[in-house]
Figure (spheres, rainbow, N blue to C red):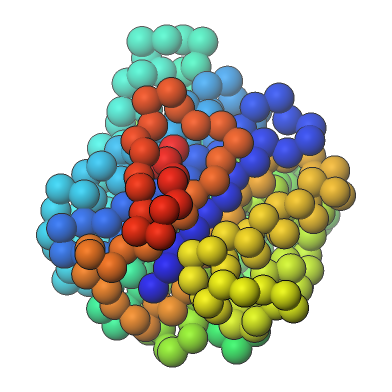
Length: 289
């Protein structure tokens, strides 16, 4: 198993309101996350960072690997993170409405738990195809799911989010469980890429499971998938993407490794000053941001 991610503010936005991270618990199981601060709300960059760091740091302190217990634990921790955001907002009215989406996944032995709130997505990449694992929590989608009928495209605030961290007292994560097969990859992304690249185009750049021409690193290794993410990000920037872009890949989920075999690479355009550095076996340097 290898994990890599990349985040960029893009050519239009003044700063990066996305947050991304990968953390291992004491049982050696990874928790990966992408959070996207709601751009219309001041302080949402902070909200996204708070959620990722709160869940990630808490995950590092536990050793649970039972599917149901992990789910219950994450629901509880998500509630605590949401309460923290609300508390910060109460003490600073300037950011009282800050909010963030999240998509997360925990890779256990033989199972992958996926959850989201908002429109950041998770895809299962299998045999070159991308299967959407999450639901975009927008007003339009929620009304269509409830009624079973298409909603008028002129509906006011059709794309407004209905679930997120911050603002409301409760967070309602939506869950999916996947049984990974040999060669499966997992792809988490904020909604930025989708604004200029279809999912088919994203897969054309990532080329999951295929050796790219001139690509020397081992297929599915940290170096390999880091290069794929760089190509994807460059393509979005070339199309003048109007939003931040963040993507994370997990390869070979059916293979489990203990902490001694952790392999992780990170690249971000903006890193907090106190971010923790990680030195990897192959000499790569990264940060948790």
